[in-house]
Length: 577
Image: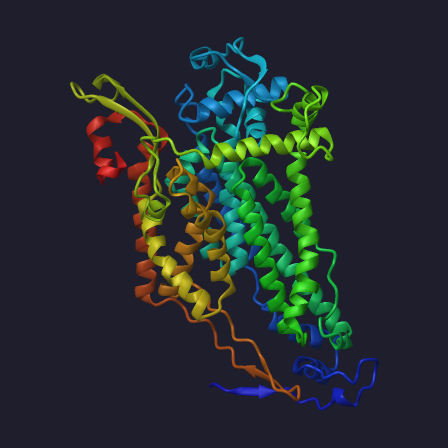
């Protein structure tokens, strides 16, 4: 049966005359006066704020995510020490991490230092500062593994990246649980990330991007917690005192602890790579949009202004300065070591009697700004050709993967007889995830625009923050492995789109409508439809293809020794070679 029924209480708030009664009241304010108890008013507001759906059964979710995370750990930790030599840009980041741990900053090395370094001989490190173009957070994390396992341990170089990748699998599952309210969809999202080639390879080498991805995910998780916390607080305050809505902007919500935490995480993301700043900007705008929508739902008459001044300003104060201070704190080692690159630039210039640009700033801060300008000039001017550079327009289809490691061996190494053997670590996404997700992205866009589904918008926010900015840098020397920063959102898009098409995704429940006189029209809420037999077959068939593709490509993601002909069988397109 379909239709609506209205609340039956008849109290009319227009008879009340507290301060501000001359102002017009919103329909929601009228509706709240019809509800006799605080609990009833709060339940009504929570329904309008979409806070009613139950979470997945915790024990089932914990078991499912625990099993998938354990699988991810096995994939990322077994054989992590292979190869025992530095691969790709490990040559920069691992040696910088060791230098950071021992000098407090990046020193310089002689020509061809890698063979000695790989044996544990670090005598070539000079105290002369080297110019590095990324902040220290990722390298500091790499240095922790070196401290524990030793400089001659390739496992130690990479273990921090592996742990960040493993934790990301659990974390994306928790995020999916908050978005989809489904143990199956949450576990599937985590499983997809566990089986993706880009994420596997980036978790098994000591590069920086896996840390950027991890901190960006932590930032989103904290934002989702803030969304729930701030909306719950808004509902509770207005339910306790509906006359707060006589203020056309509604109540203040200045204290946002989850936003403070998000600011710390996003500041650390920027401290890994500057591209984390895009996440801070886009995630911040997302909080503003959520707050504006919440103010409208609870009946603030000037909800746009409320979104700006009661939502946007407090959100900015809780988020952006914290991120900025966290980023600045990530340079603590640079500040405390006079030998660091450009550390005494301003002081030396002043001592020479020369004019100091921005001389009104403290010398240390001025020197840091000068260093940042040098890094910026390097990044914008980086356009040298590289064999594996790729155009970001092709990233969603993994058109040009990155070869991180390649080695041929005699045929006896893999039982290939007279044929050659090969070892490869290729940063290539699982095609069954990336290609399906590219198609499902259309479903996500449709859900965001046509269904105004906030979950779809959340997924798009990840693409906008961590992928779209790269489209402006097609002239730069950039690589497909940068996509690890947003591969969690690729997995979320896969699950959202496939879930919508197969019936596994629970649609958003309709919210109540309030007439101008405060009558509450509650829509009927039919049980969520179960997936059809065809939907279940399609869902599990797609997951089977993902698992089979993972098994097939695992050797070229982990550097296993295989016959060269088998490696060639993985090169489906000329651009993959």
